[in-house]
Length: 305
Image (cartoon, rainbow, N blue to C red; front, side):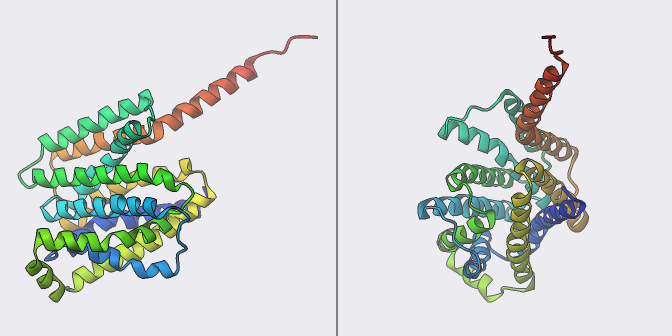
């Protein structure tokens, strides 16, 4: 990758990492499910400028409900319940673990031994975070965030049916299936009174947060990301996403004064190492095997005729 393209990838990492702090600030005084509905309703006008992915409406709806409604509905609820933004950015990466498990159960994909090792490391990290959490880290917040990761992982598997479609197209058109279900759930769970009060007092923080998530995190982020994925192999670009929770963790520390305990540091590090092994391990082994085969072929001396 050229230095310019590396810089663009890092810009996307920065935008997506800071998104957790932005969400935290926007949630002040906002019911989380209603906030999700508003966020994705604001994405809908972009459909006029983004071609619809050539996939079945059923698949588009499934991806939208799982990767957008489910993931962010649980994430926003977790943060509203008191889960720190930095810790949320780390726990959400359990999606890689769930993706492997769901793909094995639904698609019959057998995880490779190195992926099983990564899953063990990631699960160990989650246990450290859960068992070593301080009183400021509510268990319900951790569980809700894990549910969001599960929904994301299921969405990853569902998106296999949308092979070839751009991430921006799936995000924009999948948003069509998010606002109404989230609004109904908000009215049922958070109550008409809370919804009406929040809409009446929809302040500057909520507006700025929504603008950031719609324009920067969704439109700008996915446009740059899809451009890079169209130029380079996915194996060169995808690993940059492992830096997103690092940025989220540090941003929560710097901007919100979040002070994670030792368990959060250790557990978060184990989780990221596990995710890295799951994502990068198979590719590394494939490359190593190819190099060994090449080395063996080059070391064979041709016999004289």
